[in-house]
Amino acid sequence: MNTEIVRALELAFPKPVSLKDRLELLPDLFSAVRKLQGYDGALDVIIDATVSAMEAGAAGRDPTLDDGDVRELQKAMLKLKGRHDVELAARKREVDEKYKSSGEAE
Picture: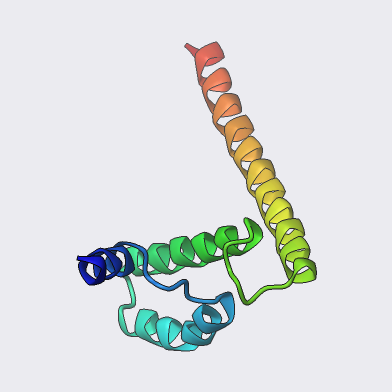
């Protein structure tokens, strides 16, 4: 019974893949995306997986990262989030201006 419990746990919670191992896969993934030219969804999958790996590392869930690496990753994630927030605010201003202008014209 113990063996079955351990087996079930190993299936449900696989061994974490290190950020280093995931990064080593990127060239192959980008090569695959080049072959799928025009399929934007493939790039979205890679971006989501990369961000997910970075978030896991920043949260301390990658056992191959030391405390210094985790801090650097946390800084990088904050910078990325800040850039995303700035881009989102700029898009919002553009849309607001577009509809503000068209509303005044009507």
